[in-house]
Amino acid sequence: MLNQLRPALVLTLAFTAITGFAYPLAITGVAQVLMPAEANGSLVRKNGVVIGSGLIGQNFASQRYFWPRPSATVPGPYNAGSSSGSNLGTTSIRLKDRVAVDIERLREAGVSGVVPADAGTASASGLDPHISPAFARAQVARIARARRLREADVAALVKRNAQGRLMGIIGEPRVNVLELNLALDASGN
Image 1 (cartoon, helix red, strand yellow):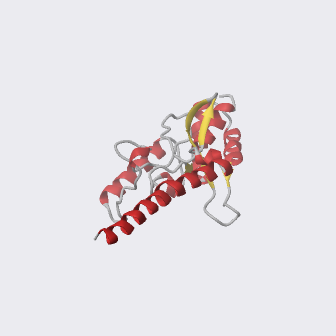
Image 2 (cartoon, one colour; image 1 turned 120 degrees about the vertical axis):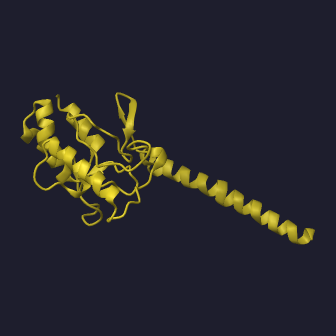
Image 3 (cartoon, one colour; image 1 turned 180 degrees about the horizontal axis):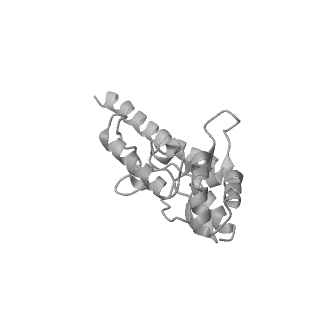
């Protein structure tokens, strides 16, 4: 019996060492060398203080800032400790009611015309840091009013911070809300 047990234990320990320790340490080391900012969470700093991550959205609620898309995390929005979607289907009354509330909030804030889809729908993770350029443009008038800026200046800021598709074909055009709001603060008002 020991002849059968020993190889099993040795292989278990060997594969635990390889896949549980050596491989993760090697990948971490390679990531730290090749892309240290990304390996450390794409942290965004202001005056040397970490204020967020370029990969995890934040809940901006002030009229002076661009708002992110809705977050489905609980107990509160953009809770990175409970990343998940709402799992509400397209026929869900709860989903329709939540979207209606979000759209009404945008209408009350001055968004007119067609409301972009990401303005009323949460991402799959509930933590998406990006909005569509259309949703950012829909918020320009509100922010210009709140900051007493010209709409053209705020719209130009959106255009400068918009990112296109990766390699021209992958993903959708997007704007990182945290970076856009930092650029807005840096613009002076």
